[in-house]
Length: 185
Image (cartoon, rainbow, N blue to C red; front, side, top):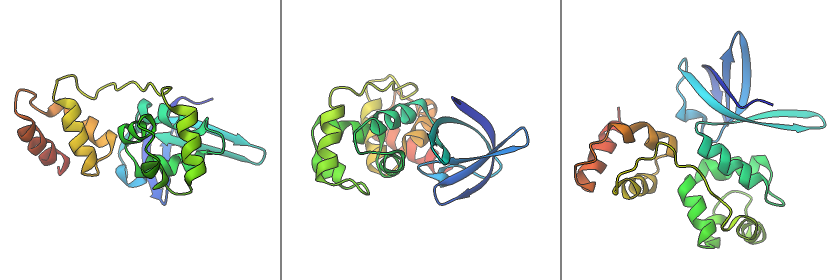
């Protein structure tokens, strides 16, 4: 079983990236392949999905994403492809918050998630998701900053990339402006 792979991104399309490592190209399903840049090196955390005639790799930019994915695929009736679609259209904190608050409307917005599956997700996962927020910041305003950036559509990986560069002594408004400036680089 693979835990992660480090390699150079050589191809991206649909929900697939190809990461080259030691002359071998690994085809990996990811939630947002265009958050990766061609010819850059990445560390991608992996999940191996093995079926009778299919061997598929699913990749994640962070351990937090992988942990949530593993929780989601543990839900009865929710497979890896649906879990990946959920990860692509929602933020980690948004998904966890929706589960904890039993927000069916939020969960039903995801592809192939209807009323029955949304209720099953809540039933199976409420109170059971403990995801390490490594690198998400430790100052008092970081939660508010992360929340604002996620509401603007930025992914957790993008946010984590800029958080260490933000001056935490500034007001939240100034931190948001600084984060947005860094996101656009």
